Length: 321
Image (cartoon, rainbow, N blue to C red; front, side, top):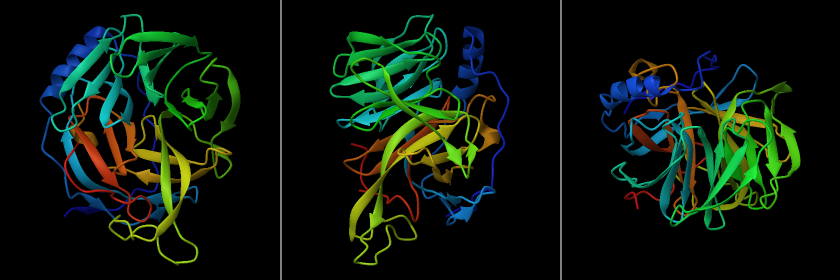
């Protein structure tokens, strides 16, 4: 078992977000040599405090599986027992269904070369995919990937999730926008603040129900290793967000945008192994049925199931189905 402690803060890199076809080909060749082994059993220490005073939780790798190292991951979602992925890059963007156990792409729809794929969510039998700067939100049939319709989007599209009623979109700033799924109209927005300071570069998003202890039982939400105590009765809905060029996930209160804390994934795939500066942590999917949190990155050769000790239980341990 390998132990490390969550770092106290992270500095942002200043690298190009876009990817030309030539650049993509070069990094794809580099990434193909990095499909290393499973990091199962990797465990970090308990929560510490960030420089802004907010709690920072560590993580435990429950399992990991191969991930296509040529995928410039922009969105990740688990729906109806399947893993779906949105990839980016002009000339390389796609919508995919991926076999979790092997990492093999079993279904794919390519986007036109002019579009840069971004965030992805599953919505009432459909898949909804953002584009970066094209001002288009694309919707597909979840089973066939047939194009259904599209909506207009003001500004840039980065991350996407939903709360059961509205789509929630990030655009690389500190703002989250809530949209009407029928019209695309903005219904409200929140500014994400960490102890009063804007948290910028918000990227991929996921709606995560975090278990909390029953106030009458006095039970902790999770054990020290992240396993459920068996006495949980309530949950707190949070938005978990990747932060571009940061190895932390931000935990956000959807009601007011307050940052509740961070999950530090430093060392999950070390910087020294990454083929280029844009091979950053990006992609969060929550399997509600088995309570699995899945994470990966752009051009990463592995996809990880992680538990967050003291916060998010490990869920049901078993095979990848």
